[in-house]
Image (cartoon, rainbow, N blue to C red; front, side, top):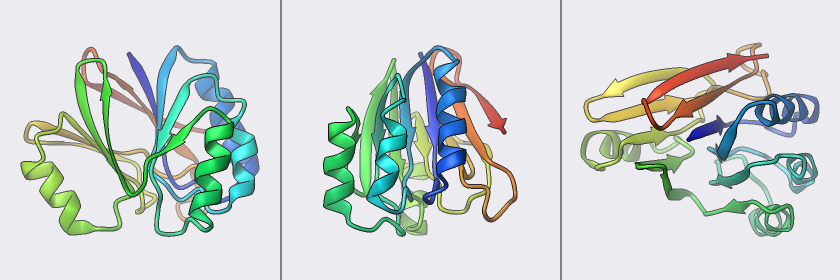
Length: 164
C-alpha cells in the first residue's frame, strides 16, 4: 500500500491544491496528515483528495470541532492529538510533533513500525531502531521555502520525499 504523508499546510490553498493533485496522480491508498491545517476553510481543498485521509490536530489549528466536522463532511477524519493507524501490515503512530517527550517515547518504546510527525517543517526520514520515523516537511513552504510531502510504501518500508 502507498500512503501519502502531509503536514503543516497552514492555510496555503495553492500549495494544498498542488499536493492533492500530486497525490491523486499516484496509486495512494491512504493519506495521513500530521496537523496544522490552521482554519476550517481549508477543508474545501481536501474534498478533491481521492484517498481517505486520517489526520491529527497541530498546535496551530483553530476551531478544532469545526475542522473535525468539515473534514468529516469531506469524507476524511481528524482523530485528535494522536492516532494509531493500521496501513497494510504496519502500525503507524501519527502525531503533530510539538511534544518532544512523546516523540522520543513513541520512537523508543511505542512498538510502532512507523512514527509520522510534522511541526518542525523540515522533511526527514530516520530509522529509529525498529521504528521508521517520518517528517514529511511542510506543504505551505513558509519556513523552508520548499513544499514537501512523503509517500510511504508499506510493503518495503521505502519512503519517497516529494517536493513541488
